[in-house]
Length: 190
Image 1 (cartoon, rainbow, N blue to C red):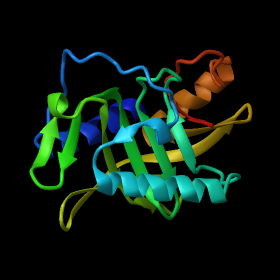
Image 2 (image 1 turned 90 degrees about the vertical axis):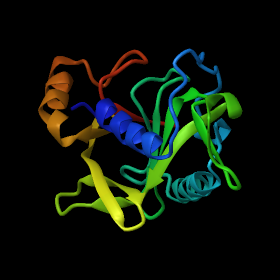
Image 3 (image 1 turned 45 degrees about the horizontal axis):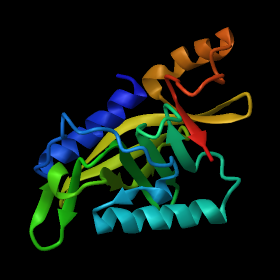
Image 4 (image 1 turned 30 degrees about the vertical axis):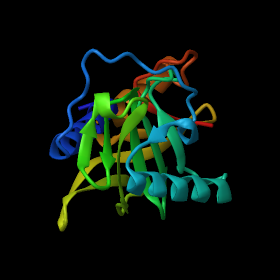
């Protein structure tokens, strides 16, 4: 399973548990790429995102903390993470799901412009790999994939364990670091 498929699966699992469905006919909102400009409707996720952004700002030279995307397009999913504050995975599609503190989950039509986001803690393995912990319900936590921080051509990547050989081959062939906006691997962006 690719990095994108792992991240999407994690987001879909939590979206289904929350009772929300993706709006199939919704258009893509053309907003700037920085996550700080994206509206995350769940206040708990928004608070974690603020903590992550603060931690990244205080440690700009950290080897793997930051914003990761497969594409520079505004509708690309974005993984934002920092060692102590955890991670937030923001869907690139606008209007998919949000929560209201009083009435629970609301879906696309009720929350225009809001982006679905999931969050959680980071678990470091003994090999320097990163695992994303998803709490499905109180006390029920799963680990959604394992990623290795890598560099190529001065760029930083998070590569799923299953894709390490493919990444090394892409670097050997000169496909990474990528020359355009699209890629097969999660790359850190400013």
